[in-house]
Length: 182
Image (cartoon, rainbow, N blue to C red):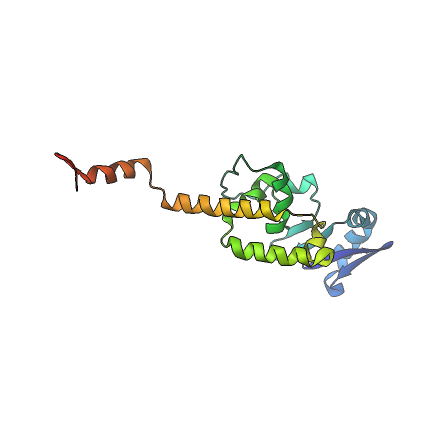
């Protein structure tokens, strides 16, 4: 559908106007007060026609995350502090998955340096920067850098790790009956 809703005082605004007709217009009118209440709470709802998925930012109602989309995940390191939950909006602000799913995005950081440069520039813009839309959360760059580097290190460690049986075979091929090969 590609329709964006906004609250303007006691009026419900939507864009583009030509996409809101017939049954959809009737439904919007019928639920106007509920929609205005949600929009006034600071949320922005946008429906994407390609996926029929409703995107909700920054506060996600529990009903929206009751059934997260399936995905493969890497376990979140236990040593990460609970404050890491604040950072999930940075990487996936429109993801409706529960926080543990979104935290796994840290393990998927491909270029930690680029991400940190973007973050410093964003924070440097102050409250008018892109993060203002997501509640202007304060982010600790040292923690972010530690998270990104830990994720990159873990990814590199996993890519160089051989399964136990392959390590055993590799060690066996380097020995002979008379002892280790020189």
